[in-house]
Amino acid sequence: MTDRLPHEKGFHISWDQIHRDSRALAWRLDGQGPDDGAWRAVVAITRGGMAPAMIVARELDIRTVDTISVKSYDHQNQSEARVLKAPDAALMGDGTGILVVDDLVDSGKTLELVRALFPKAHFATVYAKPKGRPQVQTFITEVSQDTWIFFPWDMALQYVEPYRGKD
Image 1 (cartoon, rainbow, N blue to C red):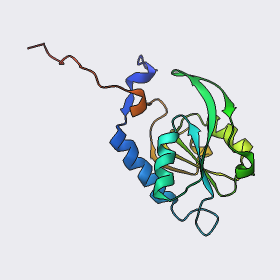
Image 2: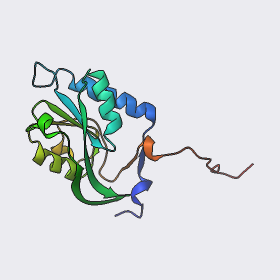
Image 3: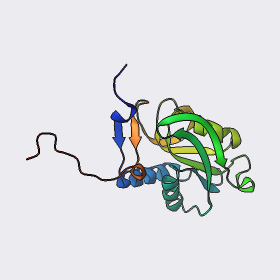
Image 4: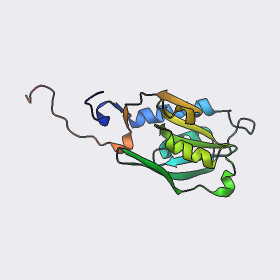
């Protein structure tokens, strides 16, 4: 057991890093769709999946993009996942040819819920933690379960006192 708070074992992601890692995700997914390698659409899990999904859609020239809004966190506390907004039902079907993108799979509860709705979709995340890995088919970077990822949309630049002294 550790005395650290969840945010103290942090992995800070810059806008440049999320862009590079999202492009790497696109490259890994290129040609992997069921329609001669193509994907019918990208569905971003809001809110964290929106930036990676936009980058993946651009890189793979996918013009149909939708969202599914799932809430499973209250600040840094995980809660029961629930759908707040579903994607277009006619587009989704059972999920065949649909690429569902999120920034991170943590416990896997969000993806488990979405997978139950669209079992034939392909699930991809930029980052994955061990507990959630069974819910994702494609990811770029694995981090430990006790690491808190700080995404650039959650951060702001600010002055920090020097480690030693103020002179």
